[in-house]
Image (cartoon, rainbow, N blue to C red; front, side, top):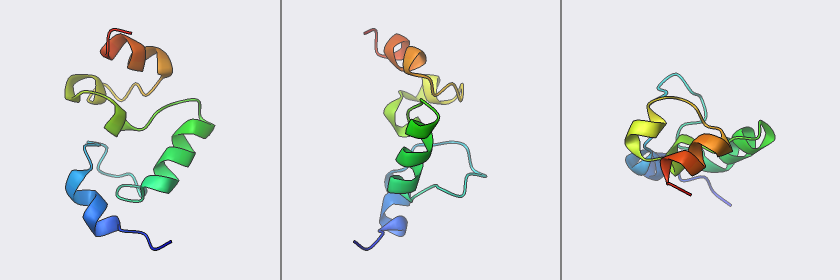
Length: 64
């Protein structure tokens, strides 16, 4: 499968600009899941800006 990095970057909501995985969604998801986290794109903007990618913060952000 060909990576669509340039296309993905148009929709990437992650504000961690120094991340080398931006736009490479499969690497981003793999990285965060291995750390028991979710990528920034799973969070609403105010929660994403905290850089707390935990499942607990995800549930709190979405009132689950």
